[in-house]
Image (cartoon, rainbow, N blue to C red; front, side):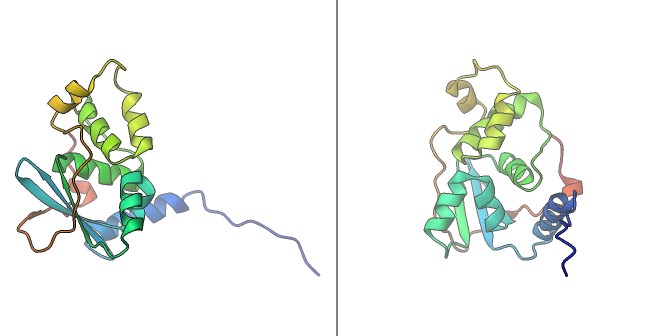
Length: 167
């Protein structure tokens, strides 16, 4: 005799899962990809989870699915601080930035093909913002250059969530 089916569901599971993954990332645990980000000689490394990057970014999805052996990706022409904000968005679906920084985040989101972040940025800025304005803010309008890198001196960027600076 069957009582019927019941659905057991948590309203906070997704939030708890992403919080746990962020904590693992900031502690350097179970990360399976390192992203090196360079902008005008400022080079930082960010450890992350490939699945989070691929799920958040069409750019990472296509790159990582095309080469499942990649352990390190190099991005140029993206501000390291902007990429840190992208990671925060990828893990939490939200970030806080100064209004003056939105165009920088928007251009990076376009390069990384993170449509949710593009939409969030575009909702906050006038539609008259041009690519020229976006370039002036410190992000090249060409797609980021990527390649697999090995052994390079870099500044590690393993920042805990509580120490993230608000822009």
